[in-house]
Image (cartoon, rainbow, N blue to C red; front, side, top):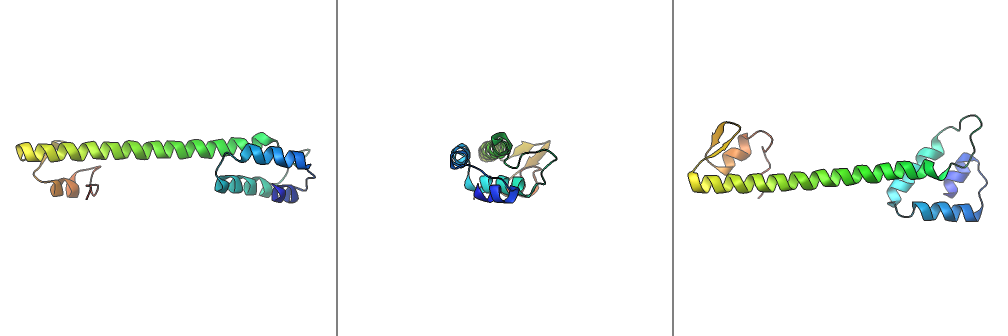
Length: 125
């Protein structure tokens, strides 16, 4: 926060530093550093105060946190999808000797792993 004040030419009370530090403390340090550096490098607009409003820091931090949660959710969903796909493929090949996917018959898990669109190279080891 002191870097931000220096970069923006702001005089800030210890109470304000403490309030801002407390507000951003719930976010990962790397995100806070990135947002503070971004705000510190941004040229001030005419009539704009040197010290940014708290929302100018919190909004991008929340955006980064939301994006990270969405990415983690998508990764969990993809993992669940892959787990189910390979379970079904294994069961069908063991039971019937064939697994039909996308109108194509596959006769081994290795063949599925080599050729099946969207699942190529994803077979668990």
